[in-house]
Structure formats: C-alpha cells, structure tokens
Image 1 (cartoon, rainbow, N blue to C red):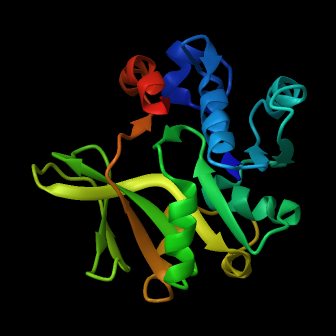
Image 2: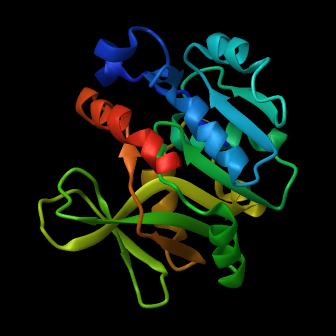
Image 3: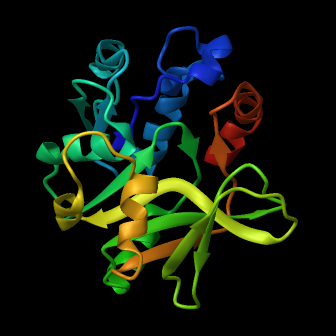
Length: 228
C-alpha cells in the first residue's frame, strides 16, 4: 500500500495543483520511481491509497506498469495516514503487508526486511534510517533487540540516530487495532504498539523526502543514483 493522498501544500510552487507524489523528477513522477523500485524488489501487486486528485492518479496508472497489478483505494474524505491504510483493508489478500509513504524513498531490500519481520515474529516492523546530525525529523528509540521503545520529536544533534523511512511491514491482524475514520498511524497507532511486537529494522542507506521545495531539489539531483 502506498499513501498518495497528501495535498503537498508546501510543494505547490513545484507541483501546482497536482498530487505531491506526482511531482516530476527527471521527467517522471516521483511515484513512478517508487513503483519501479518496488517491482525490482519483487512486488507484483500495489494498492494506491488516494484521495486528492485520485482521478488523475487512476488515469496515469491505468496503462502503466502492466507487469504488476495496480489498484486504487480512494478515500471519500481525508482520512490521515492511518485511516488511508484502514480504508484499503478490503484490497489486502496476504497475511503480511507493506505500507509506504508515497513522498519518501529509501533503497530498502524488502525481502530482507520481511525476513527480519518474520524472524522477530513482529506485529509491526518500521524501517529506521541511520542519520547523523539530524534536526529535521523525529527519531526512533530502540533497545538492543531492536524493539521500538519510544519516539522523540525532532531536535538538533550531531549524534547518530534513526528516523522513520516511512516504510512499514505488518501482519494483517493489525487492521483490527485500527479505528474507523481519520487517524494518524504515527501519532495515534504507533504509541499503542510499543511493547506488543513493534520492531525497528535498521537501514544504513540514503533517505529522500520530497515534502519541501528544498528537499525536492535534492531529490532531483540524487534519486537516479540511488536507484542504480
């Protein structure tokens, strides 16, 4: 499942009124790069959790990536990151599912992350990217078994930390813990999972977030080399 419903108001100077995930990088929508990487990693079925301008997303992907199945889960109204996943539950066929933020990219090896998730018998596994000198993102605190203990709001530091890559792997039964309606997976669900099989999968790899014009410019320069 890929979250595609964001308005991207901070990126309007770049995208106009298009959905944030459709911001063009090197002549193609950012979401195209993300899906292509998933296919390379073995994905055969993708669910786009859409809301804003969902019809334009549906039209773009109707004839694209014919080697995989792309389905649309459309929100009747904005449901937040968690509500968008819950809204897509009816499309899920597997016992384990990946959920991704559509405006982020990290070259995670999905088979290895799935193996870690299954080895830990985790309910939810969150990909954590190693960063130094972080001041723009909240950080994940983990113990020596890689269990998630807490989340800290962003603060300036030069220390090595782990931030969320916006990539989640979880058992289908987690949908039972998700409320109906609008909610945030980060703020409303994650705190309730601590101590209940919630793990962090540590990744030492580049991280791209196109949430602001400055980060988007960085992505345009570095995305292709991350895919090679």
